[in-house]
Length: 233
Image 1 (cartoon, rainbow, N blue to C red):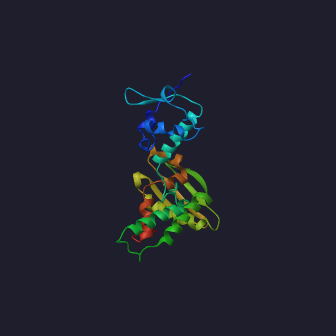
Image 2: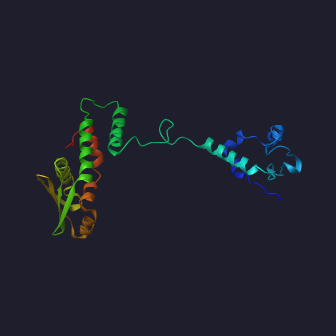
Image 3: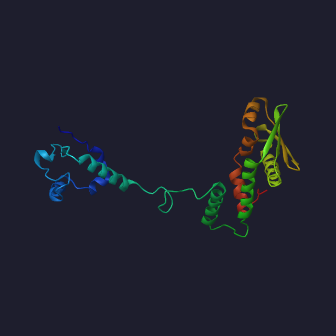
């Protein structure tokens, strides 16, 4: 029984030029008595097609050999996806990665005023974000066209909650006609948000943590904290 292997994909590959073709493969017959190519000639081996292609008769071990060739071609076409040959691109957990991105930008700019740079301040702010997201608790009450959030935490979390809530309210107040007011508590903060009637379902869906993550000010805020250009509260 004769089976034919379609080589169109292999021939189209850039790696095909580095593989032995019909003439060269004919010279491989004597390489090893146990080779799947040994003893192949004429009708038992390869035939020159009228269109310049070639056909290969299936023989024991042929499929294994072709599988190896395809793997070789794949590896030749693959390029490392990461950094310096590593398959990885992420330099660390979220705070580490955020700081690494800032440092790369600062180092790439010859105009950076290093006397104003304050990476420690950015690190503290990123820590506040993590603490509030992970270590705080929230009680929610309904208001007329709004919600009141009581955000509290332990002695370590409370200062972070106060800083994050008050700063976020100050930045977001008035955006899309949403009104934010906030005040400090001994163990956290209270945030009240009132919105147009049509936005009430969205406010409830977001809840406190969705509100905290909303807005496109976080990136410029982090950049300003790090390079000392302002907006770094």
